[in-house]
Length: 76
Image (cartoon, rainbow, N blue to C red; front, side):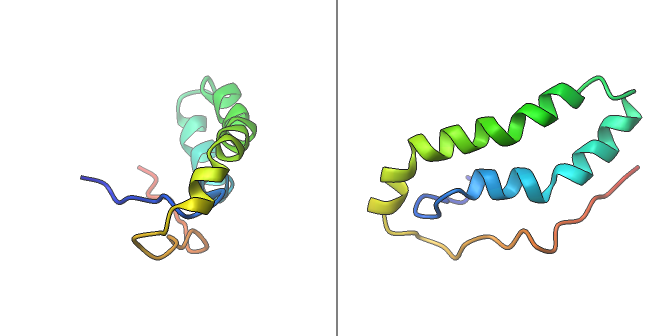
């Protein structure tokens, strides 16, 4: 199973921003068709993270906050 990331506020938004350039590079391979969805991912992640914020603040995290600063792409 995947890691439990409850207790890390706004992790989805942080991940969306960190991996945006990689996703744009991959979208260029598909003639930029997925581009509108990539642009909408950041504000929608922010809205969902805001809705889930009380749960993130109440629950103790079971793991360290994932590091997205060293995000990189494996382009084909």
